[in-house]
Image 1: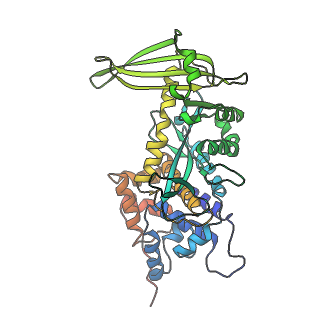
Image 2 (image 1 turned 120 degrees about the vertical axis):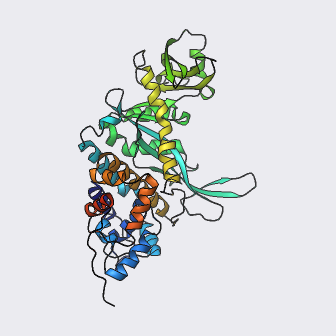
Amino acid sequence: MVERLVGSVARCVDTFPDPRRGRNTTYLLRDVGMAAFSVFFMQSPSFLGHQRRLEEGYGRSNCTGLFGISKIPSDNHIRAMLDPAPPSLLQPAFDDTLAALEEVPGGLDVFRRLGSHLLIAFDGTEYFCSNAISCPQCSTRRRSNGKTEHFHAMLGATLVAPGHDKVIPLPPEFIAPQDGADKQDCENAAVKRWLAAHGKRYAKFDPIYLGDDLNSRQPICQAVLDTGSHFIFVCKPSSHPLIQDYINGVALETREETHKRGKTRFIYRYRWMHHVPLRDGKDALQVNWFDIEIRRADSGKVTYRNSFITDLPVDAHNVAELAACGRSRWKIENETFNVLKTKGYNLEHNFGHGRQNLAAILVTLNLLAFAIHTLADIADDAWRDARETFSSRRQFFADLAAITAYAIFPSWTAFLYALARKKLPPQPPPVPP
């Protein structure tokens, strides 16, 4: 499976525009794109350096056997060649990742909730910030000290499920200056563009989109409905006073449950109301509102409270699951962005800024590496056998990088077998001096 999905990325790279305009070079576009992808996939900034040394000594390297690279390009060449490539050209690789999960018996079913729905969480995050470095694709903000910060941000979209420890990133939408726009780009505008670009594609999964309070406005809700999908968005009382007017003083339908964590009991109280207008006006969208409050049974102390809006029906039988789905939005922050920033993917590191799309294309390749790793953890037996021989994820990727620094493997099958069995294949003879 790993070999197949790495090949999918390579086929996408083949569609990148070539900025050389007929100039001679020894590098293929595939070499350039897959060299960048290999660094993220191996989680090793020094991976290409080690492979160059192997190539000098043995006439080949793991770049060839594992990533299909015929000749390793220089770092500057990689940056210059990738800068014109729009990240949207990598969309088919995200599609192939989901398609591979669908082929696994029960693979996609573990993500389904509330019947047949898949949950897709939205959230924005920054992946670059500087007072000195900037490009035409940077957003800006003025700090209180008078300095201007330049930054890159994106809207992430991630497949999540409550009670499931895996998440799968989908194509991002970048928050960047838009042609002809007077105002600076924002997260809500990026959500609309994401839905316009991808909503019909994912409608076959009958998705429920999850988002924070920024998304619980009529234009976003309507954009979701226009794709034939559903939503559960956080709805803060402070930003939706009209909804609060409707529920205040009304005897709301209520359900309470008792749950025990260790020796402590907690009371989960759910309340809901149907057909609440989302805003003033005759054209207001009617939504269903619900909230959840969790308090300790012994002291009555409230440990969690939140409220949501949805287009789905709410009743005593499904309100608890609706709330669990709405709360699972945090997984895009903790189990996607936090992993990408702190667990080896180094999302916030400036791998290359460029003048056009370089920063965005590198982030997208990084997301694809994470998506393929996750799918391999779920469904690739050879990958899982190799993973089980190491005590931690960090150790696995450390050995992944280390073993490829001195041994050459003809394929992913041979590589993963060697990792799982801790036995190297026969090595090619060195190139004569």
